[in-house]
Image (cartoon, rainbow, N blue to C red; front, side, top):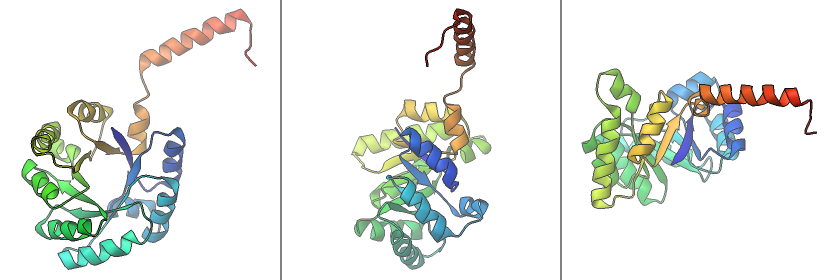
Length: 217
């Protein structure tokens, strides 16, 4: 499974990248707004910090506008993945942009039917939003499972990018089902390493080591 960081916080991205655990980054207009920085400047900086795909989102609503914006965003760096919404115009834009050899992330997917269309349009990634479905009492993980089954049935090459990740359980369940990628805030990814028994065990080891009066260095 690939790990993408859902953020525009360059310091957090660099910290994760230094561990070797980070495979890419996703951004959107809301994330760029929270960063308080210029979209071109921060996106370029992110692309330089990671080798993998960096999703940058278009904001036009019509296909022609999305295509023009996507081509412009793609000029930032070779690892830009152009993000378009899962609308009819977004699918048209995906077909054109993917046909030009560009990575395309079709976002705001909330149904298996939408995911089928994204794959047919040539999307590199489709982004089903787990947390937002959970928010309205639907099962986000069931959607990931349905898409996995359908894509495997027909050999679709589009990667399932589980998005709107809220908890570490979302990550584990996505991995169990077979999502290709998860994108989550850095703080959620870091929480994957936390476990009370790890902390307790370490505390015990250190207490016993202190009793020996020894040092390693």
